[in-house]
Picture (spheres, rainbow, N blue to C red):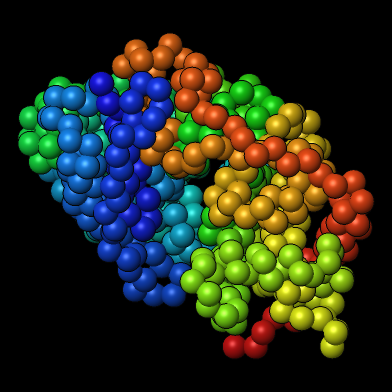
Length: 500
């Protein structure tokens, strides 16, 4: 019987059906309305639009698969992290959801850091106060919209609002809860001390489950709306990053992924909560029971290449994908880009600098340099930025036995080789990559007994291919370039800010 993974992203909701071998039967995506930004730095979405898109995506996937209503064995959920969905006593939405990229909470983060203490905050939640996290959003609403806050009776994360619509249950998973700044990541439970410090009532928070655990079943009303059978089990699932890692087989200590999408993420599975006392990487619970993960983030990874394409073009249109043309152009420049460096801080930076005000720079240009040098420098600069995360993992003694590449950075042969050289380790990619919805479907399979464990599910369904070894000569040259790259951020910080 098919398993359904449903991923609630920022741009859309994706439904994916797989069989018991992990083969994709069908999928469909329904776009969301673009997030609203009423003021600079704000980002809001309608939870009801997520529900509309989820219904449409599931119905389309079922139609593509020619499945009947009762065929689906279980449902797993994944979704964007950190967003806040606020419900009143009648379970009505009080205000638009403040989503992960909303940046209005700088003052709340500063207050949390001072009130709780930076070190204590990391001890309690395994993370520093960041504007994207959920708790600062709640504090902002309480401070700036007190009449709305007085109505709040439930706080849900984005995918968990869809769970509520499906099952009527207020529940979340440990991985997604880890991004709220209210969760005791080490002990996998809500933090009583954080709730007390912020004067929040635990009653508004959802129950916490492990990723494969069944949290509820489809209500008759939801079943009718979404096109499935009443009583179909819904498992906890995971955050988009944790579920995506399950889909890539990054579930055991030593397994690490480096994924380049709009942002770049280095994700390492661990068997315990490994902490960076400086808070440069995130430590969250994994969607796998009794495992955790460490995650470093580059804000503008694939975005750097997209920015170049949008501003300067992708060369002569020969009918091929513009990114393939850019990669071919970059390949004509030498390794190391003849000294040109790219600092990819188009959207500030998270790892390792935690600096929302950092700005990008292209350094080392001479008259002899060409577009090809610049494009290659961008590819190398993004890899250098991800290398920063690997450098931190090394200091934390987090094992890195294998690196699996994902996203656009895995599709380009040149970028795969650059990453192998920069990380100085063999890299590989998956035979097929289906993202977080695939991982959510695997978690549904574990929860409904198709596989006994998440490890077994991944061993059965995830196939690795295209192993790429570093070239010793090129890796040595890029090691010298990386040392130069590491001097860029402190040098850029000596510049005065741009005048208003």
